[in-house]
Image (cartoon, rainbow over the protein chains, first blue to last red):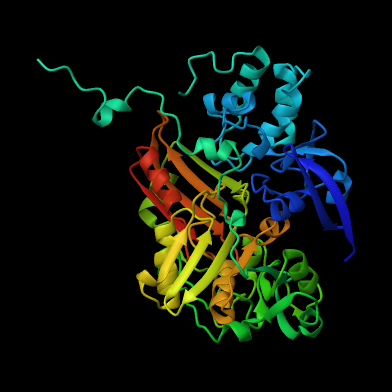
Length: 165
Length: 353
């Protein structure tokens, strides 16, 4: 198998790697870079668990090749919280709203919400709920995730009675 | 009078919102699911599976697979037989039919694992598994409940395709008289589709033989203790020889009660090869070859008096548990739900699986 050299920024750190042409971004992140928070639920682009952001946009890392990430800035769930451990607003929102149970689909949901609410992006509740159509969750019945979406859209994360700590 | 001390005992929790202690790790990518565990020298497993629902295995050619880079082992059931394992039912009893980790001479469902390949990467294992040549003599598949009634037994040496039966399809005279004498007699047939558990985290196991009586398993499961007991009985090893770790589990829905064919094949191969083996089921495998739950047909007759009160009923229940149910089971619970839910003077049934 041919090897290809790639350089990318992963969770703020520069990384260089040699990858096979067929290696998916998800396999590179899990097996090479140690980002085991990237979960593979289907490897068909259906379940959304492997979602990461590439240059700020939500991407299913099972459908993107590692070589295609050359020169890109990739963020995984491991890169969401602040260096001191303070949760990103999407993590705080999901915790307060009990938006997770087993936690397998959660990293992908977080990355989609992060892409749609970070920086200048200000997605509405409807847009966030609509984006959830790209994620399968077997535990929660989605209602906790919907509450998290509402809190993110309304800017009430950490302000309501649901604050956990 | 002393005020209750709210910092002690159950009063700390009652009526309080309790933050889950596992959330911080699951929200930051620090969860530990089976596929997140890496051991030194670990090999990855892929299976060559049956593409047909039923047939006799004529030949297995593994020569090309063995030549592939990174491949450490290509094992058939003949190889695994060197370390016997007794696959048990959910009730820890021996199965009524021989159940082997890999297919032994014949296949009984599409996706049944036939050959185990262990290689340095999953990609290499899949490459090699795709080169295993298996020749089959195809037999008519037995897929539906209707086919199972009339077809010959899919398991050689058995009388029929019914693994468990309780009750009588014939309605006894007394109940028949009650139904016949009722103001209203109804009969209704209900068909319930197959249930596929489909957890977000597919099945998976990492097995490491650390010593003659030291087997360590990381396995996605519903109860580590149940798995440890099951594996110790299946392998004939003391309880203390098995350590099971399941820190985070991505859903189970009844699928992951105890190991089944693939997990047992990996465990036995790890014992034989002396190297840690990891198998993570992909979604294609999960949808093809994971055990599924009941698919059921029920014909219920009921009699009512002029005021609409139940006078009696009779149920004929058949459930399709597939070729290798985790224990012969006719799902008698269905009838318990019927007689517990309604006040009725008489109920009789037959239940078959």
